[in-house]
Image 1 (spheres, rainbow, N blue to C red):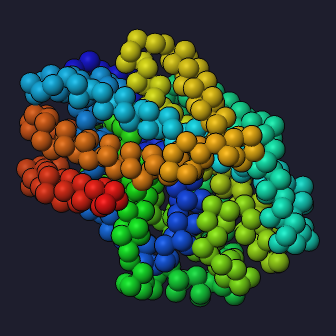
Image 2: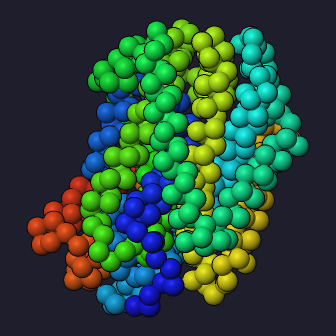
Length: 446
C-alpha cells in the first residue's frame, strides 16, 4: 500500500479531527429539534442505544479501512478489494459517500449561514425587547430574502474551503486544536448558565425520564439516522481520517472517545436549550425553527439573555465551521484519488457545494413551490433523505466490506485490538450492526 503524504501530528489531533467532523449541526441544531419532535427521553434512549450498537462498531470499520489503505476512500476501498480478490467496484462506495457528504454539506452551509446572520443580529441587540411575533416574522423575512441567504452561504463556504485548501497539518489540524476546546468551553458555560434557570429541572426530567409508549417506528428510524449523522458515519469521511491516523494509536479507544465526546455535546446542548425553552413555558417540539425563533425569544426574557444568546450563536457557528471543514476533507481526498491537486480539488468541491446549496437557499423564496419529490422542497429533501437513508446505507455497506470482504489479517492489524477484541468487534458488526441497520432501513419503506 502506498503511504499518504500527510499524517496527524499527534493522537490528540486525530481525536479532535474526528470529533470535529462529528460535532456540529447534528448535535446543536438537529438533536434538540428532533428530540423535541420525538418524545425527548424516548428518542434519547433509542439514539444512545444505536450509537453503542451501530455507531461505534461501524465507525471503527470505517476508520480501519482508511488506516489499512492509507489512501482516500476510493483508493483504500479499491486497493483492499483487490488484495482480497473481491470486485474493485467496491471503490464506488467511496464515491457514494462523497456524494452523500456533498448533499449534506450543501444544506449544512445554508443553515450555517443562518448562524452567521443571527450571531451578528444578537451582537447588534436586534432581539432586545422583541416580541415572539417580531422574532418569528424576522426569521421568515430573512428566509425569504435570497440575497442574504446566498451571501451568508457563500461567506461560510469561503471560510470552510480556505482551511481545507491549506491541507491537513496547516489547515485542519491547526484549526481543530484551537476551536474544539473553545467550543466545549462555551458549551459548558451555557450549560452552567442553564442550571440557574427555572426550567433546568423540567429539562432534565424531559431528557432523562423516558416514556416507553412514545417509542414508535418513526422514533426508531429518526434515532438511527441521527446516530449515523451525528457521528459522521456512513459517508466514508472517517476513512479519510483513518488514512492519516498514527500507527501507534488505539482505534477502539479513539472511536469510544469520539462517541462519548459527541454524545456529551448533544446532551449539554439539550440541557442548555431546553432549560431556556421550559423556563419560558415554550414548546420543545418547534421543529427546525427551535434554534432561530424559540431561543431568541426565550433568551430575551432572561437575565443577561442578550449576552448568552450571542455566546450560543458563536458556539453554533464554531461547531458548524469545524464540522464542515472536516466533512469537506473526504470529498477533496476522493478527487485527489482521481489525480487532481489539492487546491484544484478543493475549488471544485467548494463550487459544487455552493451551486447545490443555492437550491436550498432558494427553497424559502424563489423555489418555494418547487417540490420535486414526496411533496418536499429541495431543502427538505437534502436535510432528511441523506442523513436518514444514505448515511445508514453507506454505513451498512462499509460494515459489510470491513467485516466480510477485507482480508481478516489486514482488518485485524488495522483494528489493533488483539484476538479477542477483533473477534468481538467482528461479531458485533456481522451479527448485530449489519442486520439491525437493514431491518430499520427496510421498515422505513414499509
